[in-house]
Length: 87
Image 1 (tube, helix red, strand yellow):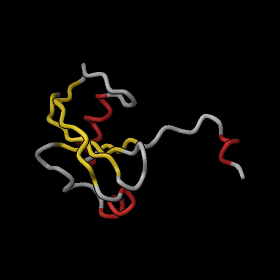
Image 2 (cartoon, rainbow, N blue to C red):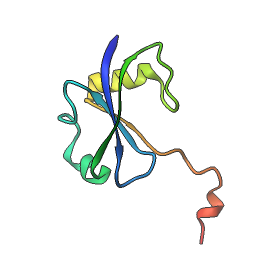
Image 3 (cartoon, rainbow, N blue to C red):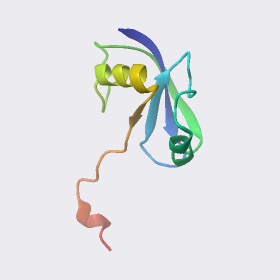
Image 4 (tube, rainbow, N blue to C red):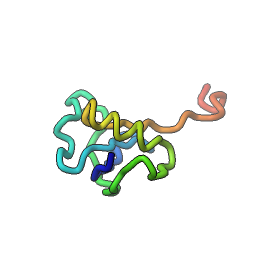
C-alpha cells in the first residue's frame, strides 16, 4: 500500500502530530480532537509505504489507521523521569 500523506503538527501540544491522506486532508478528523489539537500547522508531505522508516511510528500502522479511521495521531513521547513533573 502506497499513499500520499500530509503531516500536521499541533499548535497546542508540542510533539503531537496528525497524519492524514493528502487527498482527504483533515476532513475525517473528529471535531473534538481538532479542538484539543489546536491550529494544525503543515509539517510535511510524504509518500508513505511499508518500507518508509518513521522516527516514532510504524509506517504500516500509520497507513492502516488512516484507511480505517481517517487519521493517525502521534502523541508526544512519555516523559522518562516522571519525578521531574511532581511539585
